[in-house]
Image (cartoon, rainbow, N blue to C red; front, side, top):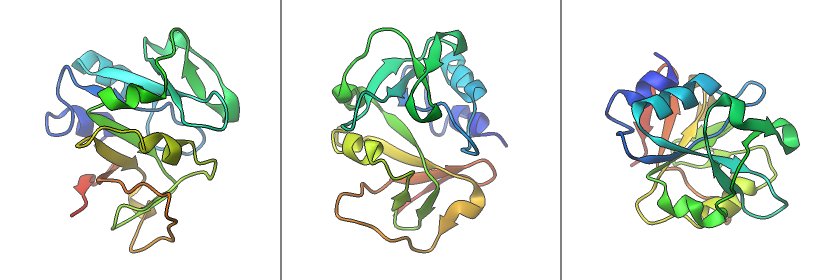
Length: 163
């Protein structure tokens, strides 16, 4: 089953919700089609924009033609930037990861943009690491600044919530 199908099956995302997502790079799971599917389903989709070393900025996804090349090989939305606090309107944040463990510790690419950004989320916002099935581990090293995920999403296993 695809990530899009898991997300829009009615158990994870509902129409009208705001979802922070990302355009995958390299071997990251996900696709531009997933973003289109979320938008067609009725979700409002925010994408990250790297503006420096601090927290991520965010912009609305308005289709593939509204993306431009950004730093680190990212594809970012053009148009108005909403600021780092746009995360506070999110119901769900899909977070790219290299690995995640069963306690919700996420291993990212090392620049720290997501960890600095996720510190600003509203209480109750779901943080979902997106990985492949084989990228879930028993335990990963963590640091004090690491933000724990509330769930993990994989193409084959779907959504797994952390207790």
